[in-house]
Length: 146
Ligand code: DQA
Image (spheres, helix red, strand yellow):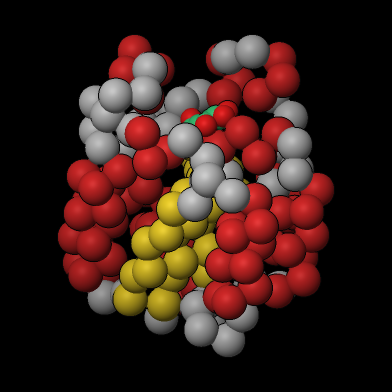
């Protein structure tokens, strides 16, 4: 079992980006947390970040045939990108939408998601720990569906 954890724009700045919203955990810390969780679950992990919508779409396409599921924190593209939604639909892999912050407690424009329409489920509001929750949820989903 192989899971792709894909991070979108501005998440490379975690740790110093609005720490009151996103915490002080860096993306490198989150990758380490994901690696620990993945090895405890016995799943392989690929961890990617890009600020570019096209690169995220390419990474989703590349997951077809190489990965069993995608965990996607698409950042602000969550709320804007039909193209990312279409990419997920095109590869037909289970996806979990993830956010560090509780987007529903924030500005109105963060309440809508193109990703959620095609996702198995959504995890938000648990900070960096949400990544561990999402990995567990995906491992269980893949077990149950495979
Ligand atoms: C985010 C929430 C988005 O609304 C925002 O644009 C981000 C981060 C989160 O992880 O809380 O960049 O995806």
